[in-house]
Length: 362
Ligand SMILES: *Cc1c(COP(=O)(O)O)cnc(C)c1O
Image (tube, rainbow, N blue to C red; front, side, top):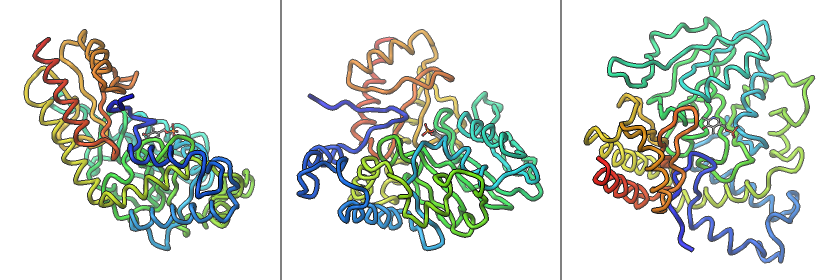
């Protein structure tokens, strides 16, 4: 069987060498004669894995002692409610910067728990392209209990170049950009990311949160499993964690370190996305609807100007071994997600296919 190049936005492709390693040790992990799926999370072998995953991630992202690292259940969507439950109530206001579907959903979920100032940061510019509204034009809250934003909007293909300013704690949903660019973790009080884009399989969410912020959270009347303080004290093992997802994440972190870490991933992300954008921009056949300065490096939506050709493109691409290119149902067209595990050869193969398709139908 030959592997295809998988451009799916999520759950996304994982590095092939990681999958092969997981396959090799699937039935016999660490010589125990059982799978990693079949051992106790309290066993010394699993504890060693969990600790190594955390220390590798800390090294990769430069996470210091100020921040706790949690491997939690549920998706990013779970954090949409978990964060406001701990920090928000009807006496205080949180700011939500919205620039697409995910940040919008986060804001709507939060508004169920307290006051939300939803700040729209997306517009259509003079060239009819999606773009981000400059921070100076936002109607900010005077003393937000926190500011939430989404550095990379996965569906719209929009990226903030810098962390947004904030008067209170800064919370970021990094589901689709974590580990793809060098950030200063100290700029953030709370980072979260669903695993299924750049970390591992679905079912786990990474949380990186300042100890000082979790001290301020109030979970007194809420389930203990949601309480970040308790999860932090118990090493994310108040109950059974998603052990297989955590294991695969640990293999991905090892792979990232071997590859040269986040600095290398950022270089590659710039190179891969530039290859594709340059090709799309070459003429009118293909079109990317995002202003150049706000273009995502991870998720690249594009359409063919003659919209009847979009489904034909997707079908023929699939037949050619380029899968997962269908755009999100809300925006249509195509989307190529170029996460860390997408090799340059995959992007080249996509561009070759796009070139041939254009010659045939253009
Ligand atoms: C995929 C995605 C989500 C949703 O993740 P789930 O794990 O399905 O809840 C949220 N935010 C962003 C930015 C995403 O890309």
